[in-house]
Length: 222
Image 1 (cartoon, helix red, strand yellow):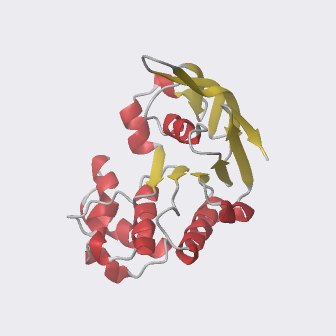
Image 2 (cartoon, one colour):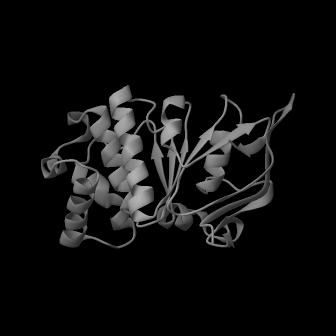
């Protein structure tokens, strides 16, 4: 069964002067163990769809199902905290917290604290191919590629099998961007995550299992 299903989702933005139909009945099923790309021009609706799948808002029509349950029937704060891990282009690390504290932060929100949380942070940092020595550093002491790896470690600390990445290579050079995509592919193929990447970077598409294009408010697998 798909971990995440989008069923006839519609979403529009309205202003005093116009209405923009960002999504016009999007349906798709995302499975664990696969790496997906969401592509499309700026304003095509891919960021809107990603935000709905992340539980930042609800569809105006249709529904998002996580493990068969509609997000409309969930506590969205809990869903975001426990089920939908998001990786951002800008990393969004806490600059005044160490790497260890950044990675353990989601665990602490779920009552997982102390030495066990720190030991888990150490495991996750190693999993994203960073040395243990970065744990006591602050984000500003790391390169962009290293910060993105920390952001991924923080995301997977939630133990959710759904990872949503919004332009995760956008602030990285080609080499580091390629490494991040390889890491996300490993999380999908080796650890069974469902990884969905919204991207403008066409160079990463050959590494994807599925490519979905959003155009004129509709989604097409290409």
